Amino acid sequence: MRSPAVLIVAVLLCAVPIAPAAQGARPAAPAPAADQPGSIDLTRASVITPGTLSVQERTAIRVLVEEIEKRTTVRLPVSSQWPTDSTPVIAVGPIATASIWASPGLRGAPSAAAPGREGYRVAVNTTAREAPTVVVLGADARGVLFGVGRLLRELRLTPGSIRVPSAIAIVSTPQVAIRGHQLGYRPKTNAYDAWDVPMWEQYIRDLAIFGTNAIELMPPRTDDAADSPHFPLPQMDMMIQMSRIADEYGLDVWVWYPAMDPDYGDPKQVDAAIAEWSGVLSKLPRLNAVFVPGGDPGHTQPKHLMALLERQTTSLRKSHPSVEMWMSPQGFTGPWMNEFYGILKTSPSWLTGVVFGPQVRDSLPVLRASVPARYRIRRYPDITHSLRSQYPVQD
Image 1 (cartoon, rainbow, N blue to C red):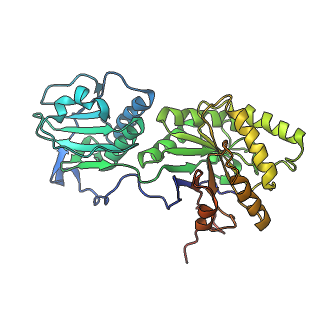
Image 2: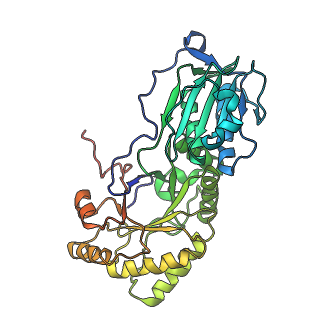
Image 3: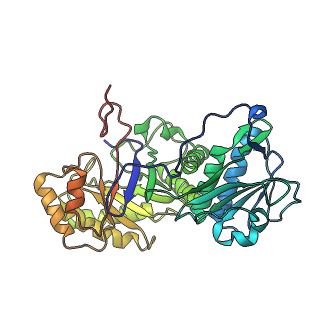
């Protein structure tokens, strides 16, 4: 049975272990605020942003203000107008237009390498103005969010006090393309099924602060009970809310959708499955990708499974035109693996990528060598089983 939480990692041509989105060693634990040499007081700072922000960028600003307030009781004001030079500033927004909206805080700042996609720049400038300026500049909307997350991790927050190390000068770009976590709102987890919408938003926010760019949801029908005494909302309603939250944060939404019906060689069963999946997934505000496990659960011969997924892709793109379709050969026998590889050699255009997870018969190097290079490979490490684990740690 699937674990309730897994990490998702993929690059274009090979799968690799997850790497931190931000590079560099973590700083030592902070000393009390009064004993922090080399730090700057931001308790009276204003947050300055461009006059126009996307929904995702506005969410990043909200994250910064709310998380600081929770730990300090100080709520920083937000404005698009720069204050007098005597007021510290945290300038947050896209790097592409920073020379316009953030120019007062950039004067005299040393040049820095531009971050790549989803990357950010976080730096303290004490030369441009009488009061210090902290700039958080994102390469895109996600970069703004991840830059805010990095700043929050660097700040020294205590009741009534906001301080930042004065020597911060960070440019960071993620090292892997997909950095995600599966969120299993179902009875199996003995935890997630009791969470309400605000708890899910906080959890998704916490993941984003550390560089997560994708979450993976589950449909109402899986290999688990259809209900839980702890559910604050029905599964479909919560799935919609979680997709909405991810969209506000600019995170990708994946759905792990097992093909569990007994015979997908039966056209009537295929038609029913297409109607069911469309009925569920068309309701989601955001859907970027669907991942269908070949097993655990499910056990369908590759030729029938691939035919099903081709039709599902066509159907789902009516409501989500750019949705990707991924699948795994989990639980395939030797002959089924050969059949699967043979189908891939025909280069089905509807398939985006292949997932390497538990119970895949071939090793990752063999899988990569056998799957055409046009298909990306996503790693699916099982990290939360307490009795059996894909990656056991001795003792």
